[in-house]
Length: 324
Image (cartoon, rainbow, N blue to C red; front, side, top):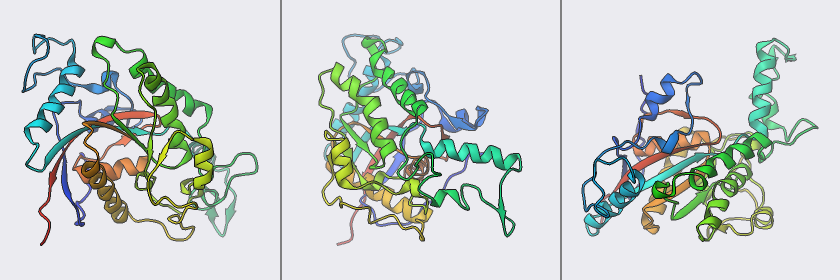
């Protein structure tokens, strides 16, 4: 049975909802998957269907060809129909970063725990959650602001093929705006996913870094970001949002962010994007917990996503009347 995360009452500019029947149901896919998680679907699971609005180039609406181009036109049509009533629509490509150093270490420790090979202190196993997550690394690798491992880079490069190798007559539309978490694994994933396609189609590659898109603020060092200077040095083409501090002022080694707090900042993130960005198709490169938070804000039942996966969310935003 699908789980709906309880809606948290927050101050908001928009009421968000996901629009069903355009893409395959991710909850059903996750439930039928051996891993219990969703992986990237062919053509992102777009459903062959008819659309309202003007037809393009006399292509029969029932024809399977040009499904993506007709869907993109439909999103533009919807937004044109609602220019003055406070309603807008976006297709959001939600990307979970590729496999990182911390993911590898967590899996290694799970195997050791299952085999009973952990050291115990006062009866408490030295597993990821109890011990290693708060360390910078283990002497061999560093997972503070975890980097991608080689498998994670390959996962991101495989996502790029959605634009590089698809039939150009019905290729996925590139996002007009690319947003990314400031954590290293997302910055690097974004580069490998979009930089080649943007170059191929003559588009500028200028991802926007948003603090509110980062992972839930646990006490784990993998969720502590690097300095602004480090980001500027290593990702010079990225646009850093206004007010982004040099050091990570949000992460706290002792006090984690709650689910409720995470949902509040995700609502704030989407409010900001829908208020200031008219792009009908956008991309968010983010993290597992943040995807759960996004689903909560748009009212989509919870599902889990594998590393290096992209899922589509078709979202409607309705402006909320503000108290005078």
